[in-house]
Image (cartoon, rainbow over the protein chains, first blue to last red):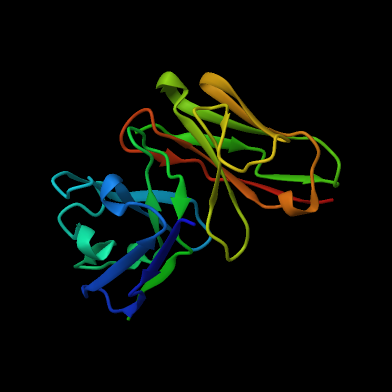
Length: 119
Length: 108
């Protein structure tokens, strides 16, 4: 069974940093592109970042480029999102997702982790 | 980026009725690269449809997707109690992938 479990969320002040983790099981992690998608309270979804199987290619939405860094450790079956210079508008539930080979939809999702940026 | 609009915002129906949800794109979605997701309160989203009309693994055949270009639809042929939820469309034909604002299907 495919499982994705996020951790590391919480309350942080504007300008602060937080690192999210996603640990996966039930599939060969190193074979898949992985992504982070977020959902602000009461809002729709926004794709945040994507990383290639070996970590050699990374893509970001414009609103987080230069502030967020996506990474992965295939030996630990884990993906990460380092979030720096956080803003109130980054407040959201962050989901770890798996992309199917060669496509950009999100076939599996974690339960999500809440990040709140507030003073 | 491609902007997706979903209608109606809320659809109030009874179990057993047919639901038709619309998703319209601001530009043509290449190769029908459109997906639909279901989200229930407090749960992770679930992929229903990809490629505009292909059902994801384990999705009942009462769910069907159709459309091309800028106009797409998700149809639930006969609503079951567990189908009352929020449904989102997503295009992945052009970067960045974008989502619609959602349609809530609630019990009449």
